[in-house]
Length: 166
Image 1: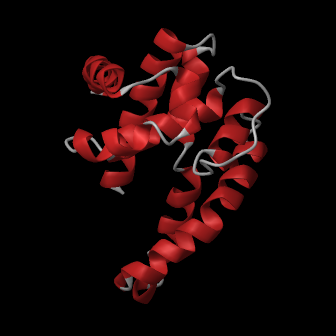
Image 2 (image 1 turned 90 degrees about the vertical axis):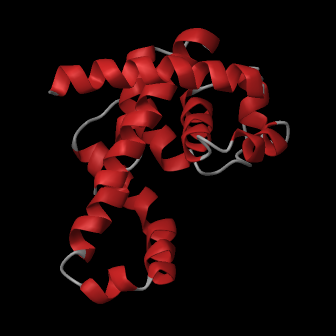
Image 3 (image 1 turned 45 degrees about the vertical axis):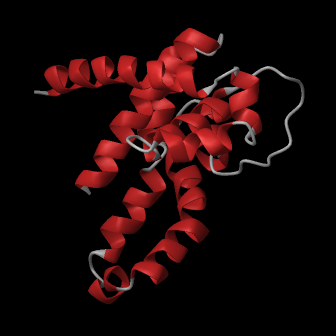
């Protein structure tokens, strides 16, 4: 649960910075998308806690997350009447081969890149080998240097967030 919260907070902060610096997407909506990207995983985790055997087998648990988290997230966020763009981005951020009309980056691009950047924090060399192959990075005009600058600015956003929630 703590790891999911950390990943969500970081994804939100990086999404906020990317939206502000590289797109015309509303940065607050991008922040919300980052916070909400794991809501389906949170739902599964809280349910799986009642079935410890599910959590013990990491491979099965990971498969369960991959298969179901987007569907649960869509139902939860739609039920909460969350902005439609956020719902779409949360459902599609892991689909790096999705069909896109035009070259303008959207919220899904922001969420996809933020999620990957956060997942590679501390291992930028690994990410640098794949940045050029992922269309969302290209649409955002994000290279590895811009990614590192974005992470630094996101650290400041995280500190502000920590202060705000005490």
